[in-house]
Length: 115
Length: 112
Image 1: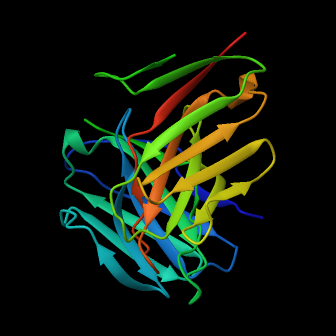
Image 2: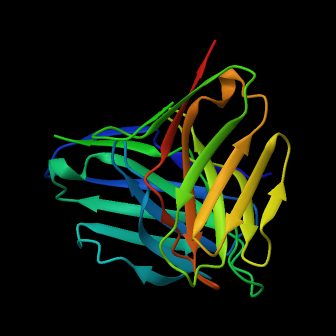
């Protein structure tokens, strides 16, 4: 099973709203990721959690706040977003083994629209 | 044929033909490479990967070739089918890296 699930599938929010994106995996993976993808562009890394600790933050604005409650769950809290933050937000997970770089498996994404 | 411009590069092939999608990577220290397929409205789907100690790896109907000398990666799809129509991304990572750097992507269009 290589399934990563994300909710909601679609989200429309105003610039003053607070919302959260959720991601879940049950593959026993210990690394989880948030990516942002604009139309016709490749995914861009935002955050990496390794063993439930934030290991990479790619200089993402503070209006995006990640959270990893446990090894299977990853949240992305959104507050005071801008219209240019509208994008597909992808979650991924990988083993995070000591044997080298591991394959990242992606979820279906949340299509976010900021009005 | 292949076209590059303001839009995503597109490769058009006839159904049943073989497809070759190319990717130039930037970091000579990268040691892990991966191909993803992304259909409209979906997340990237793993196709095949290769590590730098290999120059070729085969899967079901797909082959990845790695040329470290010229930092080039290619994905070959045999007997291309309509279901292969999608955007294909290559990605590279440095040793033990978690930061996958994606290429710009190529749209594969399969003609009947």
